[in-house]
Figure 1 (cartoon, one colour):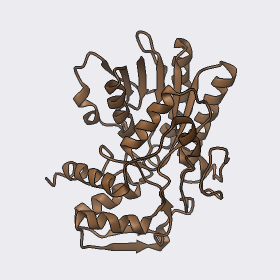
Figure 2 (cartoon, helix red, strand yellow):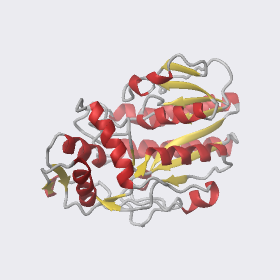
Figure 3 (tube, rainbow, N blue to C red):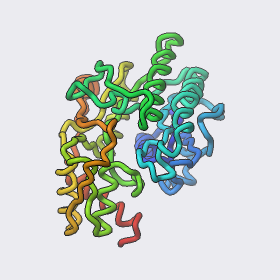
Figure 4 (cartoon, one colour):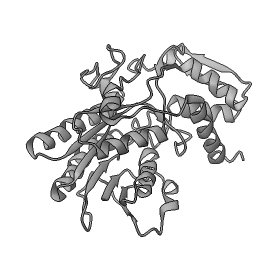
Length: 319
């Protein structure tokens, strides 16, 4: 197939391009390089089966030639309020890419009668009162809080995708991604895995906001990409959770990272700095992915973290 990938220079998007090319598809990569990095896809430059177009998907999208599938992965995703790449610093852009960008990407799919896959997020569940989270759980969300620009953009994008599926009979798919990590993450991403790996490599104490009891379920990038590819090739239209069901506390994550990096600086707690709307627990129910895609994550947390840490050593110039 000839496949359009938006957000192709981002962390997940670039790995997705690699996998699609590995499967002998042609890739048209769109990115405005606002939060993505050309270094993530520079190894693909010059290939006959890869075309990069610098473009903001919030504006009308034109792709020359036939398109068989559209994978919409464009969006700021970092919660870091101090990073120029995070959605707190890009609130309007985040809302626009979730609304206008999704509409434009769906328009390309409809014009070509192509299949469409939306990258959504576990954040659509908000701070969940149901645990683990199943796809039919409607969430416990704050539409005006500090995270709402990202959460509501993704919720709107899901609604728009299902409207195109029901009204225009478009062949759509929705993946809800849970806490993915791995090489090509930004060192200033702002999420716990990236924060801890960077601090540990610099010999600093790992900063824990809250008491560290809050949990996440960390999925390695290779496992996620496998699940996304299976979903693209499957006839599944309802949302699908993709994530690792192993639940890990933030405190335990810090201990693992310190051990892997041999960081002796320990941890430092900031109980008063935990964001009130930050979910206390996060773990996917992946029963639907197991049943419909035959998918289950394979990479254990310590192995995945080791790969991330080595990548961060390079990014930080420590090797």
